[in-house]
Length: 165
Image (cartoon, rainbow, N blue to C red; front, side):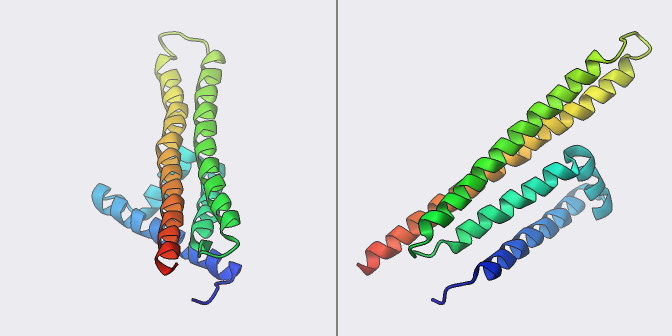
């Protein structure tokens, strides 16, 4: 099997990521009857641009690591690349969870609480808490999937190596 260049694998990772996003948007649009633009606006409102960019970086880096695993001498590097990307996804999710909770509590501390302001304060709190928990709901499962894909690929390569020996 010919060795793929790094740029080829990165492009392949991007294609997988973009394809998954398009399919995901189509499924969500079908289920919710929302237009893709409305779904993207909701994503940006819930997650922030920074979270989505870092999420994309870790996913692309991790998928590239998994795709580069081929039984060669460079496998330990690519395995570590994929596993550290999975760790990065988990850390990103938990960091943004804590950030969202902190922003919510900080906003609460800045407000004067009265019967007239309770509705607005609760709305602001739920916005921050929504980001907090949605980042965990997305980041932790993605981290788990990337870690599982890496470990399964490594095991598959070990089985193939033992079969040829």
